Amino acid sequence: MMSGGSYTSIDHQKVSGSVPAVSDPGHVTVKFAESNLQTFPPSATQGKISGGTNPPRDADDTFSRPVNGTDEPQSGGWLHRFTVGAYKPYFDVDTRDVVERLKESLFPFRGTFTEKTANNPDLYGPFWICTTLIFVAASIGTFVTYIAHKWKKQEWNYDINLVTWSAGVFYGYVTVVPLALYVVLKYFSAPSGLVQLFCLYGYSLFIFIPALCLSVVPLEIFRWVLAGLAGFMSATFVALNLKAHINSAGERWFLIVVSIFLLQLALAVVLKLYLFTVTV
Image 1 (cartoon, helix red, strand yellow):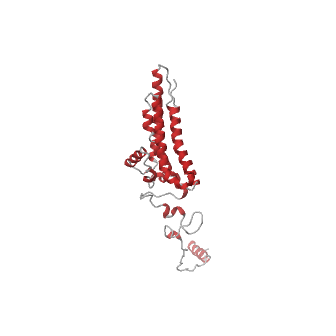
Image 2 (cartoon, rainbow, N blue to C red):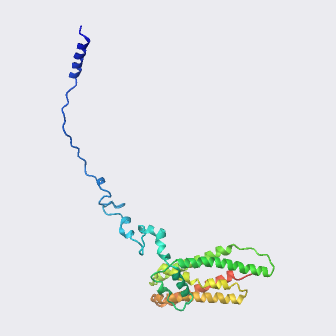
């Protein structure tokens, strides 16, 4: 019988003999394929839709250059029209510019407004004029009816419809009429800038602000004179500023100018009949 130490030594030799020897593999070199992750951004950007190697359209510098010297980039494609930045150049005027254009609208026989604003038509003035007209027309119309009722000692109720009606008339007129005229001029091959037409029609309404303020005088004939004078000056302002441009429309230019003139007069009549015809 073997001792414990001899048994352990023999058993260890048996176990060791059952494991095969593994040779040393030596140095192993691992190679990785070249990847674009080594540099960022990659040297060539893949387009979003075409799948080519050219940069996508919205990454082109044409859409990231500043607008009129500003530092703000433009958005890409037609979506730019739905951003505030697309309309910022049309509000890029100061007080001096707006005041000069308001003065020009008060002297309609000059006919130089379109020429002076050709390079920088604005929408700030028309928006301010229309908004002011809404509140002036509603407040003056309310005041006139209030005085008429109190003069005859009758009950008076405020009509909120004056505000909504005024907003619909002024905002609608300064939007729909220039847009329709733009289509007509384009049809007669005498196209004009749409923003230029918005600007012209917006400033043409300025004369109605002092006319509405003076309509508080309780004389019917005086109110008719004011409405007629304001409508005539406004119509002359628009017609003369477009006359030189519409001359290229051929023989029908006269009909276009007359239509423009009559539309402005019709606006004055509507304002007189609705706002300053008081029935008690």
